[in-house]
Image (cartoon, rainbow, N blue to C red; front, top):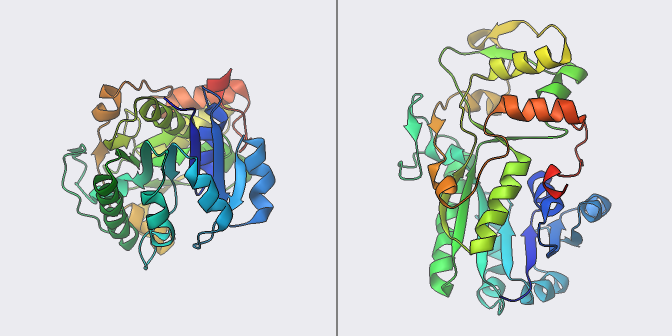
Length: 299
């Protein structure tokens, strides 16, 4: 196989975790909308380029040598910004072997706490999840049209160094909202990275829930983080009386337990199969504050 070059549209938190892992030392190029973020991308091992909805000559040239394309840009009212700007260029990529699209488990909508896997019907509730379903279908269609595998990674709530309940407790923003029987899955950024590299290694397409083994009540996560820190957890707040933004409230309008057997069948083994394992590791390692902490996969 040719030497890998990975191109990331939208190299944010997950993209940087992916680049820091980089087990084979692949060349990685990634886009951001602001030159102010170039240095953070370089520190993660990403050669930065600008992309804000228009295909530049620099991006076009980079795509010509790219073997693996990863997309982490949210759709908007006009559709998928990457496909709108670069569909023709992607279709002509001479070295392209694989496309990965980062989506969300929000596409399933509400299942009243029942288990869902990749065969479950998508019945999204929020507008943003409706747009995600459409974007997934657009990327799968492009893959069929050009004869390339497309992997759709449906991610649950993303956390990791710099984004977790330990940080929220330290800065005073942690809350323990309690809605009876409500659970969420979550995923550590290093496991997103690991799942991506696993799929890239085999050029495997399909739909994969990339999520931990243990859907859990959100207030339990805050309580566990507080126990590690040796602090008193914030008081429980009944969901019905909580002051929440419309977006935050909408998350609680969906309740499901998301299964992850497909990504395991593809050969991936989770570093952090539940939040306790991850919090224990971050607390012991001391990297829970550092949003740009080096991935332990590279050690």
